[in-house]
Image (cartoon, rainbow, N blue to C red; front, side, top):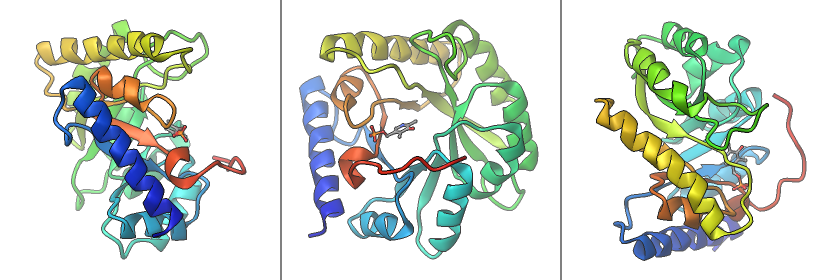
Length: 232
Ligand SMILES: *Cc1c(COP(=O)(O)O)cnc(C)c1O
């Protein structure tokens, strides 16, 4: 078995154990394999081990990989910042965008989504722990943005995404993730049919699953340490 296959099985076992611990069904949480900075052969290895959904941060780098791997039935998620000048690439090449936090970006993605492919799945990125310079909409603005995005024809609003600062321990991590969960529930109570709460990474996926995550984004624990930072 390859190292990537072995790591994937370990991460799946962590997710299953966290689901059991939380009293959730083992298939309640999807695994997004974050392949940023890793090559197409690493993605192909993960796919050979059964992984279908991949997350990428750097749009240019991602588009190269997506093109090279077009023969495989993969699902691509954009989890990095989306500038206006990159919306067309995202709209054309990805299946999901997790990091939408402005109406203008959402509008461009909707306008630029090609008619012949399904609507782009979208999550709103929420600045759940209130970092002053952080990406993401403020929690109190999430409902208004969600209602606007829900009206865009070529987007399908699926849920919320957050990237909290690393927490000192499990309880502290849960306290932040639960705020995202409460916001997710509040939006659904307002009639938005959200099914995706994208939170949890290699170091904190157990706390995220305990708090209601439906999709964890895991890179290092699958592909190993990243040795360089790609540009956008
Ligand atoms: C890199 C990244 C991840 C994966 O992080 P790991 O700690 O390597 O698991 C998840 N989400 C986002 C937004 C990332 O940029």
